[in-house]
Length: 481
Image (cartoon, rainbow, N blue to C red; front, top):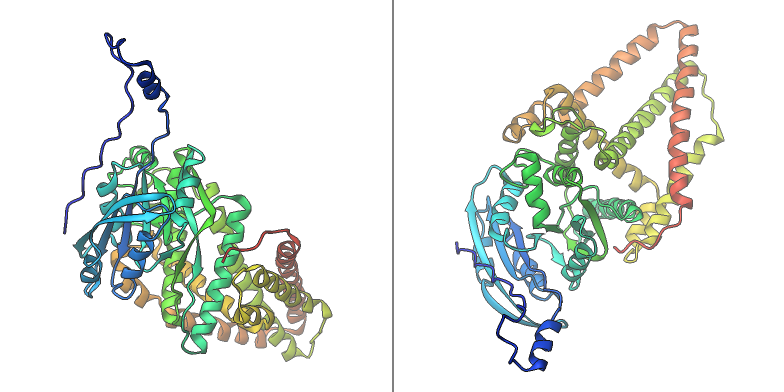
């Protein structure tokens, strides 16, 4: 592990001292006229863990930027593969010739071993390496930044002194896909990412800073530490450390932005267990912030504007779960009594859903036939939504049964105690109980239940359809993915 270099001090022209009137007038004029704005400094932190296959590409992408970071620190945490060795091959000083002229940078590699803080711990370690710079650039070890990404992130951050951080738009990297499950998951993640990008771009506001490529004002991070009385910018006891930092930045008076021109490619998740684990952790970490007493913050703010997107996402997933389950249950109940009533109105929600998904797919600049088929066939998109609904249900069940914010140290125990099989068992038991109660009910009770049930499901389905229809007719720009 090598130490960080000192940041070279920036010098400004000094006015002439008394007694210097004998200097040539043209020299004095040249000094006084030299008012060029100083070049901001960027310290880059590359977060790596078990990424021997991708770390070289991530570092190489930074070295080929039009705006190269002034220093690059690769922070390797919880890794047992060859990540450190491969990154070390690229360490040392680099003189690069770019469109913006010759630039110098140096790559350092830090193996910090095991760290219970994981991502947040590595970010905090990196912060103290670059706290003397103007900006901190965080990059994931499997992320490949677009050649102009850093330049555009810096321009966005410098465009307004109120901006505390800027995130790049994430795209799923193209590459060989093995098997139908991988193709299904990648198409779903692309659609999910495109929807999120549209929501952020419509407001030019990123509810969650972080992800694979983001830039932060070091002064803003320092102010957050003062206001939150923490010794580090990122909370190491939070699974949603990026969302919590975004909330703290907004509370400190800073804006959290998204750059429409900066992009970064990351590999997609190609196995269902890995995707489910990622989603459960992400949603569960966000749920912690939606409840009082979140993460030791004495000022709980479950209705904070930064959390509105999270509330909207969870409400949509849980409402979707209710409508789908209720529709199936009511249909089975009606079939058992011979009171099946088919209405063409129930075709409206799936039709609007397909049109909305198709519009999103066609707006994606890099859409391929898999994206279009995923949207047009309805079944793949519906199946992917069921996966996300299941992840949300597991996250909320875990939160409600624990009764306290999710403990990172007890993650494995919690997942085993209330995993997918426990949830499926609970659902099966509820279905058996409902079926037994339905059979024992009188005909008048059954009729009343069906009448009220269909009315409630119809109202919720209509509201969801209106939301999808608004997305369908809303004018949007192309999704830069």
